[in-house]
Structures are given as C-alpha cells and as structure tokens.
Length: 281
Image (cartoon, rainbow, N blue to C red; front, side):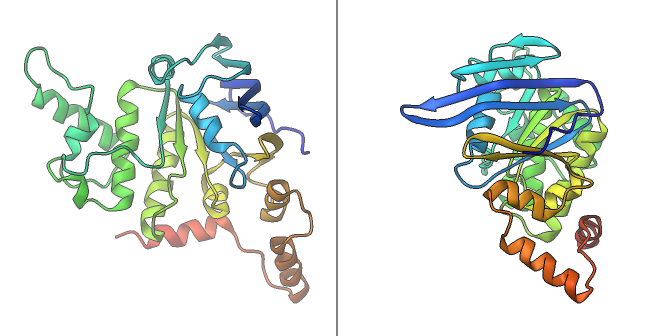
C-alpha cells in the first residue's frame, strides 16, 4: 500500500479508523481520510468497496461503529444529515433529489425557503443568482422547470443548493456518471471553481479521466479498507487500477505496456479535459 500523500493546506475534515458493519458484513474497516480546504480528493474503488457507505457516514445518514471524525481538529458526531450540515458538510447524492416539476429557484430553496410570513421571492431570486454567478453556472433563467435542463445543468442546481448552507466540505457522489462529454466538462469546471473558492471536495468516481482532470489526491478503497492514497499529478492509471483490483497485471497495465513498446505517447488527462471543454456550447 502506498504511503498517504499529505494534503498541502491545513486539514478541515479527518477520519481515523472509521468502521461500519451491517450484521456480519464489514462494509468499512479502519478507514483513514483527510480533506483540506481548497482540495479535491477523489475516492475510487470497485463496486462494493465501501464508497457509498463512506459518503453516507460523512453525510450523517449512517453512524459509524468505530473510529473518529474530526472537523477543524475537533471531534464531531454525525448522528443525522442535519448534524453534518450544521458543522459544514454538504452532500450531493447521485440521484440529485430534485423535483423536476419545480423551477430552478424552488429547487434551490426546497425545504429552506426564505419567509418571514410569506415566501420572499425577491430575496430567494437574488440569492440564487449570487450563487450561480459565483460558480459561473450555465443556467439561463430561474423560471425554467428542472425537467427542461440538461444533465450538467441539473448537477449544477444540486451543487448550488448544497452551497446555501455555506459548507466548508462538499461530497459529490458520482457527479459525472450519467453525463455526456460536454456536460461532464461543465461539471468538472464547476468542481474546479468549488476548489478555487476554498472548499474541500470529496468526489466519488469510477472515471479515471475525470479523477486525473480535477483531483489533487486519489484515495483508493478496496473491500472496505484503505488501499493507497496517491498524488493525482504523478500517479498512473495503471497504479490506480492495480490498487482498486489488487492485481498488478491487469488489462490497463497490459495496454500501457503495448503502447510503450509501440512508441505511442501516453494519453494526457489534461489534454482530454481541454477537448471536453471545447465541446461546450
């Protein structure tokens, strides 16, 4: 297992020895994870590696059976999603939890409407545009139903809603899983802006291109345990796949060896991301 790469900035969120069991099944065992301000940490792993369980623990949906969670060096207990949000951890789950029949503004303030007595539409609209402009989001109007938006725009609405509580750490569960090339580039740009605004970002992903495009560090889970933390700038896809699968001799490594033998250049993640950006309208 690779020695953990230390975050460059001061750590905001830290997990030590976090474990979770469901009956006889150990979903997570002794998980360590650090997230710094202005850093993107990609958490990768095969199906069943424990990624979703980890997100649900950090979002307060599950309570860990062991270990500690600290926020700004203070041990915290996340007994509910409200607890996580109160200390500054926001989560955007894969299903986004948007109401397609409602417009953008209604979705942004769903459950947290501004109202002294009646709905304060003016304040909600002003705040909505402030957040969207802060992220340079491509949302043409607040009055359009979410059902009419693209996949990338829906992800933008979900992320913007998570920012209403002014979190310091945001968890993104497979943010590009069901998106096309242009929409993926839009979401990756959004993640870069979250990082630029000083937020710590935990991104769950299966896509190595997306991970290499925006992540600073890559944390690998395998069978519910840590199996390496890598510097995203220097790690190769072969090393990550080997950590995910536990097999050094895998298809990705074999393909890389064939390319090297043929003298072909290794694909560059930054170049791929630039191509995606060019696809944006």
